[in-house]
Figure 1 (spheres, protein in one colour):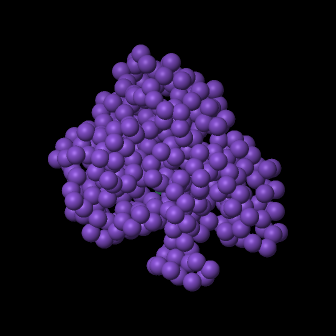
Figure 2 (cartoon, rainbow, N blue to C red):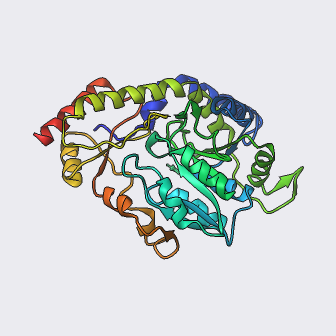
Length: 364
Ligand SMILES: *Cc1c(COP(=O)(O)O)cnc(C)c1O
Protein backbone atom coordinates (compact mmCIF):
# COMPACT_ATOMS: atom_id res chain seq x y z
CA UNK A 1 0.00 0.00 0.00
CA UNK A 2 1.34 3.45 -0.92
CA UNK A 3 0.55 5.76 2.00
CA UNK A 4 -0.38 9.42 1.77
CA UNK A 5 2.55 10.37 4.02
CA UNK A 6 5.16 8.05 5.46
CA UNK A 7 7.30 9.14 8.44
CA UNK A 8 8.64 5.65 9.04
CA UNK A 9 10.23 5.60 5.56
CA UNK A 10 11.84 8.93 6.46
CA UNK A 11 13.28 7.38 9.61
CA UNK A 12 14.92 4.72 7.44
CA UNK A 13 16.55 7.45 5.31
CA UNK A 14 18.45 8.81 8.31
CA UNK A 15 18.33 5.78 10.62
CA UNK A 16 21.98 5.43 11.62
CA UNK A 17 22.41 9.15 12.29
CA UNK A 18 19.17 9.28 14.31
CA UNK A 19 19.97 6.18 16.35
CA UNK A 20 23.39 7.54 17.25
CA UNK A 21 21.96 10.94 18.25
CA UNK A 22 19.21 9.37 20.37
CA UNK A 23 21.60 7.08 22.22
CA UNK A 24 23.94 10.02 22.83
CA UNK A 25 21.06 11.92 24.47
CA UNK A 26 20.12 8.88 26.56
CA UNK A 27 23.70 8.62 27.85
CA UNK A 28 23.79 12.35 28.65
CA UNK A 29 22.65 13.99 31.86
CA UNK A 30 19.97 16.25 30.50
CA UNK A 31 16.74 15.10 28.89
CA UNK A 32 14.68 18.28 28.60
CA UNK A 33 15.57 21.83 27.46
CA UNK A 34 19.28 21.06 27.26
CA UNK A 35 22.04 21.46 24.70
CA UNK A 36 20.15 19.80 21.84
CA UNK A 37 17.17 22.12 22.24
CA UNK A 38 19.44 25.19 22.37
CA UNK A 39 21.32 24.11 19.25
CA UNK A 40 18.08 23.33 17.42
CA UNK A 41 16.74 26.77 18.35
CA UNK A 42 19.88 28.45 17.00
CA UNK A 43 19.94 26.40 13.81
CA UNK A 44 16.21 26.77 13.13
CA UNK A 45 16.28 30.57 13.68
CA UNK A 46 19.20 30.80 11.26
CA UNK A 47 17.38 28.62 8.72
CA UNK A 48 14.11 30.59 8.88
CA UNK A 49 15.89 33.95 9.07
CA UNK A 50 14.69 35.20 12.45
CA UNK A 51 16.66 36.35 15.48
CA UNK A 52 14.99 33.72 17.72
CA UNK A 53 13.40 30.31 17.65
CA UNK A 54 11.92 28.65 20.73
CA UNK A 55 11.19 24.93 21.05
CA UNK A 56 7.82 23.92 22.48
CA UNK A 57 5.91 20.67 22.93
CA UNK A 58 3.74 20.75 19.77
CA UNK A 59 2.23 23.00 17.13
CA UNK A 60 -1.02 23.70 18.95
CA UNK A 61 0.95 24.95 21.95
CA UNK A 62 3.14 27.06 19.64
CA UNK A 63 0.04 28.99 18.52
CA UNK A 64 -1.52 29.23 21.99
CA UNK A 65 1.75 30.48 23.49
CA UNK A 66 2.27 32.93 20.61
CA UNK A 67 -1.19 34.41 21.31
CA UNK A 68 -0.52 34.60 25.04
CA UNK A 69 2.86 36.28 24.46
CA UNK A 70 0.96 39.01 22.57
CA UNK A 71 -1.42 39.39 25.53
CA UNK A 72 -4.31 38.00 23.49
CA UNK A 73 -6.92 36.09 25.47
CA UNK A 74 -10.39 36.34 26.95
CA UNK A 75 -12.54 39.03 25.31
CA UNK A 76 -10.34 39.21 22.19
CA UNK A 77 -11.02 37.96 18.68
CA UNK A 78 -8.58 36.23 16.35
CA UNK A 79 -9.28 35.81 12.64
CA UNK A 80 -8.26 32.67 10.75
CA UNK A 81 -9.68 30.16 8.27
CA UNK A 82 -12.08 27.26 8.78
CA UNK A 83 -10.27 25.22 6.11
CA UNK A 84 -7.36 24.17 8.35
CA UNK A 85 -6.36 21.58 10.93
CA UNK A 86 -8.65 21.77 13.98
CA UNK A 87 -5.46 22.58 15.92
CA UNK A 88 -5.38 26.19 14.68
CA UNK A 89 -8.79 26.89 16.18
CA UNK A 90 -8.19 24.73 19.27
CA UNK A 91 -5.16 26.90 20.04
CA UNK A 92 -7.18 30.13 19.76
CA UNK A 93 -9.76 28.65 22.13
CA UNK A 94 -7.05 27.55 24.56
CA UNK A 95 -5.80 31.13 24.76
CA UNK A 96 -9.31 32.22 25.81
CA UNK A 97 -9.89 34.28 22.65
CA UNK A 98 -12.76 33.83 20.21
CA UNK A 99 -12.05 32.35 16.79
CA UNK A 100 -13.48 34.28 13.84
CA UNK A 101 -13.32 32.22 10.66
CA UNK A 102 -13.25 33.48 7.09
CA UNK A 103 -13.48 31.76 3.73
CA UNK A 104 -10.59 30.71 1.53
CA UNK A 105 -9.62 32.08 -1.87
CA UNK A 106 -11.07 29.89 -4.67
CA UNK A 107 -7.73 29.83 -6.53
CA UNK A 108 -5.23 29.20 -3.74
CA UNK A 109 -7.33 27.52 -1.01
CA UNK A 110 -5.69 29.81 1.57
CA UNK A 111 -7.15 32.71 3.57
CA UNK A 112 -9.14 35.13 1.41
CA UNK A 113 -7.80 38.59 2.33
CA UNK A 114 -10.92 40.24 0.84
CA UNK A 115 -12.97 38.87 3.74
CA UNK A 116 -10.86 40.34 6.54
CA UNK A 117 -12.61 43.71 6.53
CA UNK A 118 -16.01 41.96 6.76
CA UNK A 119 -15.28 40.39 10.15
CA UNK A 120 -13.12 43.11 11.72
CA UNK A 121 -14.42 44.42 15.08
CA UNK A 122 -12.98 46.48 17.92
CA UNK A 123 -12.05 43.18 19.60
CA UNK A 124 -9.94 41.88 16.71
CA UNK A 125 -6.34 41.47 17.90
CA UNK A 126 -4.66 39.22 15.34
CA UNK A 127 -4.89 37.29 12.10
CA UNK A 128 -3.48 33.77 11.92
CA UNK A 129 -2.36 33.14 8.33
CA UNK A 130 -2.34 29.37 7.77
CA UNK A 131 0.13 28.39 5.03
CA UNK A 132 -1.84 25.33 4.02
CA UNK A 133 -0.51 22.40 1.93
CA UNK A 134 2.99 23.95 1.78
CA UNK A 135 1.65 27.00 -0.05
CA UNK A 136 1.75 30.56 1.33
CA UNK A 137 -1.06 32.93 2.18
CA UNK A 138 -1.13 36.22 0.19
CA UNK A 139 0.94 37.87 2.91
CA UNK A 140 1.23 41.34 1.33
CA UNK A 141 -2.55 41.80 1.50
CA UNK A 142 -2.83 40.37 5.02
CA UNK A 143 0.13 42.40 6.27
CA UNK A 144 -1.27 45.67 4.99
CA UNK A 145 -4.64 44.85 6.62
CA UNK A 146 -2.87 44.10 9.91
CA UNK A 147 -0.77 47.26 9.77
CA UNK A 148 -3.74 49.48 8.86
CA UNK A 149 -5.71 48.13 11.82
CA UNK A 150 -2.78 47.78 14.25
CA UNK A 151 -3.28 44.08 14.85
CA UNK A 152 -0.77 41.24 14.92
CA UNK A 153 0.05 38.76 12.18
CA UNK A 154 0.75 35.22 13.33
CA UNK A 155 1.86 32.70 10.73
CA UNK A 156 0.79 29.06 11.15
CA UNK A 157 3.66 27.41 9.28
CA UNK A 158 2.94 23.84 10.39
CA UNK A 159 2.53 22.72 6.76
CA UNK A 160 5.20 24.88 5.16
CA UNK A 161 8.63 24.45 6.81
CA UNK A 162 11.11 25.98 4.38
CA UNK A 163 8.59 27.50 1.96
CA UNK A 164 9.28 31.03 0.73
CA UNK A 165 7.22 34.14 0.02
CA UNK A 166 9.04 36.70 -2.16
CA UNK A 167 12.31 35.02 -1.27
CA UNK A 168 11.77 35.03 2.50
CA UNK A 169 11.09 31.90 4.53
CA UNK A 170 7.59 31.67 5.96
CA UNK A 171 7.64 32.23 9.69
CA UNK A 172 9.94 35.27 9.33
CA UNK A 173 7.39 37.71 7.93
CA UNK A 174 4.65 38.09 10.57
CA UNK A 175 5.12 39.04 14.24
CA UNK A 176 5.43 35.37 15.19
CA UNK A 177 5.70 32.09 13.28
CA UNK A 178 4.33 28.82 14.69
CA UNK A 179 5.48 25.40 13.55
CA UNK A 180 4.30 21.89 14.35
CA UNK A 181 6.89 19.12 14.01
CA UNK A 182 4.36 16.30 14.20
CA UNK A 183 5.88 13.23 12.48
CA UNK A 184 4.12 13.70 9.12
CA UNK A 185 5.13 17.36 8.70
CA UNK A 186 7.91 18.45 6.32
CA UNK A 187 10.16 18.77 9.38
CA UNK A 188 8.85 15.96 11.58
CA UNK A 189 10.01 14.59 14.91
CA UNK A 190 9.51 11.00 16.07
CA UNK A 191 6.88 12.15 18.51
CA UNK A 192 5.43 15.58 19.27
CA UNK A 193 7.39 18.82 18.91
CA UNK A 194 6.87 22.44 17.91
CA UNK A 195 8.77 25.69 17.33
CA UNK A 196 8.02 29.40 17.56
CA UNK A 197 10.00 31.97 15.52
CA UNK A 198 10.20 35.75 15.89
CA UNK A 199 12.43 38.76 15.24
CA UNK A 200 11.21 40.44 18.43
CA UNK A 201 13.48 39.66 21.39
CA UNK A 202 10.89 40.69 23.99
CA UNK A 203 8.35 38.33 22.47
CA UNK A 204 10.97 35.57 22.29
CA UNK A 205 11.70 35.98 26.00
CA UNK A 206 8.03 35.92 26.83
CA UNK A 207 7.47 32.75 24.79
CA UNK A 208 10.44 31.13 26.57
CA UNK A 209 8.94 32.04 29.94
CA UNK A 210 5.39 30.91 29.10
CA UNK A 211 6.63 27.49 27.97
CA UNK A 212 7.90 26.86 31.51
CA UNK A 213 5.42 28.17 34.10
CA UNK A 214 6.15 31.84 33.39
CA UNK A 215 9.50 31.37 35.10
CA UNK A 216 12.39 33.78 35.33
CA UNK A 217 15.10 32.16 37.45
CA UNK A 218 12.53 29.66 38.72
CA UNK A 219 10.12 32.35 39.86
CA UNK A 220 6.79 32.59 38.01
CA UNK A 221 6.41 36.18 36.81
CA UNK A 222 3.05 35.48 35.17
CA UNK A 223 0.94 32.35 34.69
CA UNK A 224 2.61 29.97 32.25
CA UNK A 225 2.42 26.46 30.87
CA UNK A 226 4.48 23.35 30.69
CA UNK A 227 5.26 23.10 27.00
CA UNK A 228 8.89 22.04 27.10
CA UNK A 229 10.65 20.29 24.23
CA UNK A 230 12.72 17.22 25.02
CA UNK A 231 16.30 16.54 24.01
CA UNK A 232 15.56 13.39 22.01
CA UNK A 233 13.11 15.14 19.70
CA UNK A 234 15.42 18.14 19.37
CA UNK A 235 18.36 15.89 18.42
CA UNK A 236 16.22 14.16 15.77
CA UNK A 237 14.97 17.48 14.39
CA UNK A 238 18.54 18.82 14.12
CA UNK A 239 19.40 15.90 11.85
CA UNK A 240 16.28 16.30 9.71
CA UNK A 241 16.76 20.08 9.47
CA UNK A 242 20.06 19.48 7.63
CA UNK A 243 18.16 17.59 4.95
CA UNK A 244 14.99 19.73 4.88
CA UNK A 245 15.86 21.62 1.68
CA UNK A 246 16.74 18.47 -0.23
CA UNK A 247 13.65 16.67 1.14
CA UNK A 248 11.48 19.63 0.07
CA UNK A 249 13.10 19.51 -3.39
CA UNK A 250 12.08 15.84 -3.67
CA UNK A 251 8.49 16.85 -2.85
CA UNK A 252 8.63 19.55 -5.56
CA UNK A 253 9.94 16.98 -8.06
CA UNK A 254 7.02 14.68 -7.25
CA UNK A 255 4.59 17.61 -7.58
CA UNK A 256 6.07 18.47 -10.99
CA UNK A 257 5.63 14.87 -12.12
CA UNK A 258 1.99 14.97 -11.04
CA UNK A 259 1.36 18.30 -12.81
CA UNK A 260 3.09 17.10 -15.98
CA UNK A 261 1.16 13.84 -16.11
CA UNK A 262 -2.28 14.70 -14.72
CA UNK A 263 -2.98 18.08 -16.26
CA UNK A 264 -5.01 16.64 -19.15
CA UNK A 265 -7.42 14.84 -16.80
CA UNK A 266 -10.64 16.51 -15.56
CA UNK A 267 -8.91 17.74 -12.41
CA UNK A 268 -8.36 21.18 -10.92
CA UNK A 269 -5.29 22.13 -8.94
CA UNK A 270 -5.04 24.84 -6.28
CA UNK A 271 -2.83 27.52 -7.80
CA UNK A 272 0.57 28.54 -6.47
CA UNK A 273 1.24 32.28 -6.69
CA UNK A 274 4.32 33.50 -8.58
CA UNK A 275 5.51 34.97 -5.25
CA UNK A 276 5.62 31.58 -3.56
CA UNK A 277 8.03 28.66 -3.45
CA UNK A 278 5.78 25.88 -2.14
CA UNK A 279 7.11 22.88 -0.22
CA UNK A 280 4.13 20.64 -1.07
CA UNK A 281 3.32 19.33 2.37
CA UNK A 282 0.30 17.85 0.59
CA UNK A 283 -0.55 17.48 -3.09
CA UNK A 284 -4.23 18.32 -3.31
CA UNK A 285 -6.44 18.01 -6.37
CA UNK A 286 -10.09 18.94 -6.90
CA UNK A 287 -12.33 16.37 -8.62
CA UNK A 288 -16.07 15.86 -9.16
CA UNK A 289 -16.16 12.32 -7.79
CA UNK A 290 -14.04 12.44 -4.62
CA UNK A 291 -15.32 9.31 -2.84
CA UNK A 292 -15.27 7.12 -5.97
CA UNK A 293 -11.72 8.18 -6.81
CA UNK A 294 -10.50 7.47 -3.27
CA UNK A 295 -12.13 4.01 -3.29
CA UNK A 296 -10.70 3.24 -6.72
CA UNK A 297 -7.19 4.29 -5.73
CA UNK A 298 -7.43 2.13 -2.62
CA UNK A 299 -8.17 -0.92 -4.78
CA UNK A 300 -5.08 -0.03 -6.81
CA UNK A 301 -2.96 0.10 -3.64
CA UNK A 302 -2.91 3.87 -3.14
CA UNK A 303 -4.09 5.58 0.04
CA UNK A 304 -5.33 9.04 -0.85
CA UNK A 305 -6.57 11.41 1.86
CA UNK A 306 -8.89 14.37 2.39
CA UNK A 307 -7.44 17.46 4.07
CA UNK A 308 -9.83 18.32 5.50
CA UNK A 309 -13.21 16.55 5.21
CA UNK A 310 -15.10 18.89 7.55
CA UNK A 311 -14.54 22.65 7.95
CA UNK A 312 -13.76 23.49 11.58
CA UNK A 313 -16.94 25.56 11.96
CA UNK A 314 -19.04 22.45 11.24
CA UNK A 315 -17.43 20.25 13.91
CA UNK A 316 -19.83 19.64 16.81
CA UNK A 317 -17.34 21.13 19.27
CA UNK A 318 -17.06 24.43 17.41
CA UNK A 319 -20.29 25.04 15.50
CA UNK A 320 -21.82 27.13 18.29
CA UNK A 321 -18.58 28.65 19.52
CA UNK A 322 -16.87 30.23 16.53
CA UNK A 323 -17.95 33.28 14.52
CA UNK A 324 -17.97 32.79 10.74
CA UNK A 325 -18.05 35.23 7.87
CA UNK A 326 -21.29 35.57 5.89
CA UNK A 327 -19.88 33.67 2.95
CA UNK A 328 -18.13 30.34 3.53
CA UNK A 329 -19.08 28.93 0.13
CA UNK A 330 -15.59 28.02 -1.11
CA UNK A 331 -14.68 26.30 2.18
CA UNK A 332 -17.94 24.37 2.28
CA UNK A 333 -17.83 23.55 -1.43
CA UNK A 334 -14.33 22.11 -1.80
CA UNK A 335 -14.51 19.62 1.09
CA UNK A 336 -16.57 17.30 -1.10
CA UNK A 337 -14.09 17.59 -3.97
CA UNK A 338 -10.55 17.63 -2.59
CA UNK A 339 -8.28 14.58 -2.66
CA UNK A 340 -4.70 14.49 -1.33
CA UNK A 341 -2.42 12.28 -3.43
CA UNK A 342 0.60 10.67 -1.73
CA UNK A 343 3.62 12.94 -1.44
CA UNK A 344 6.71 12.57 0.74
CA UNK A 345 10.46 12.67 0.05
CA UNK A 346 10.89 8.89 -0.01
CA UNK A 347 8.03 8.29 -2.47
CA UNK A 348 9.72 6.43 -5.35
CA UNK A 349 9.40 7.15 -9.03
CA UNK A 350 7.83 3.73 -9.63
CA UNK A 351 5.19 4.58 -7.01
CA UNK A 352 4.38 7.96 -8.58
CA UNK A 353 4.14 6.25 -11.99
CA UNK A 354 1.74 3.70 -10.53
CA UNK A 355 -0.36 6.50 -9.01
CA UNK A 356 -0.46 8.45 -12.28
CA UNK A 357 -1.46 5.31 -14.22
CA UNK A 358 -4.21 4.52 -11.72
CA UNK A 359 -5.51 8.08 -12.08
CA UNK A 360 -5.51 7.81 -15.89
CA UNK A 361 -7.38 4.48 -15.75
CA UNK A 362 -9.99 5.95 -13.39
CA UNK A 363 -10.78 8.87 -15.71
CA UNK A 364 -10.73 6.81 -18.94
C1 LIG B 1 -0.32 19.97 12.33
C2 LIG B 1 -0.90 21.31 12.36
C3 LIG B 1 -1.08 22.04 13.57
C4 LIG B 1 -0.89 21.48 14.94
O1 LIG B 1 0.14 20.79 15.27
P1 LIG B 1 0.25 19.73 16.47
O2 LIG B 1 1.70 19.58 16.57
O3 LIG B 1 -0.48 18.51 16.01
O4 LIG B 1 -0.36 20.34 17.68
C5 LIG B 1 -1.51 23.35 13.49
N1 LIG B 1 -1.84 23.92 12.32
C6 LIG B 1 -1.73 23.25 11.15
C7 LIG B 1 -2.10 23.94 9.88
C8 LIG B 1 -1.29 21.93 11.13
O5 LIG B 1 -1.21 21.27 9.97
